[in-house]
Length: 185
Image 1 (cartoon, helix red, strand yellow):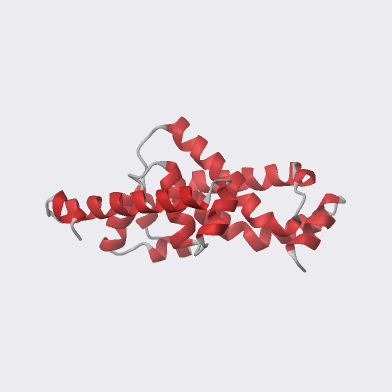
Image 2: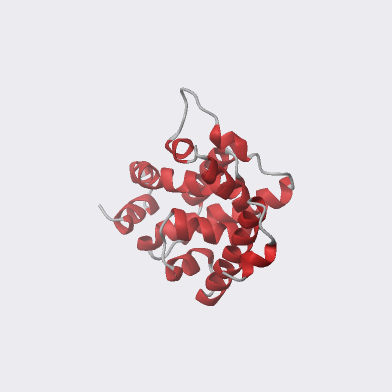
C-alpha cells in the first residue's frame, strides 16, 4: 500500500494506517533524530513527538505521497529547536557504548575513524548537520532534501559545501595537520 493510500485512510480516522506508516518510517526518523541531537534518548523522544504531531495534523497534508519528507521536516525542525534550547555539548560517546541493547546505529559507529567523524559532525550547527545527515546517511538527493526542509536546492548545496569544508578542517586539525592544508585539497 502506498503512502498516499495510507494517509487517506489515516485522514478518515483509520489508526491502523498510522501504525503502518509508523512501522515504515520509525527507523529512518529515529536515525535522523539521533544524528541531529547526538543522543539516543532525545532521538527516541523526538521521533515519538514527530509521529504524534503527524497524527494530529495529518489533515493538513494535501499530498499523501509526500508523507516521508513532511514527517522528516517536522522532525528536523523539532530537533533543531531542541538543540538550540538544550544548548549543551553533544554526548557523542553514548553512541559507542556496547551492550545488550546495542542498536544497529551504534554497531556502525564503533571504529575510531567513525568516532572522529561523528565528533566533527556534532560541531556543525543544526541546519548544516541535518543536511549532511539527510544526504549522506539517508541517501536523499538534494532536491528531496530541499523539499523536506522547505528550502531551495541552492541552500541545500550551500550548506553541504560549508559542512564539508568545516568537517575537512575539523578532521585534519585532529590529525595534527595545519588547517591550511585542509583548505588546499
